[in-house]
Length: 89
Image (cartoon, one colour):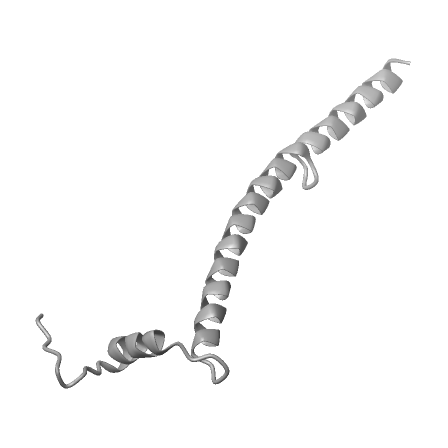
């Protein structure tokens, strides 16, 4: 009878430990939730960047041309200036 209770106690202790510390335990669940929050924030940042790039791409497309943006890109990327402008560095 004592052996039965001892085995039952150790099995209960083992399963309790596994439920808290194991690969699918409570601590691992908390880690996964924290990681999920971090990844969701990164996803939101990437979605914002993609929306900005899509906006800029649309504004420089053939169907809709934003001349101010085109002028800004020509200045920033190509270093172009108008003939009546002076550059001060």
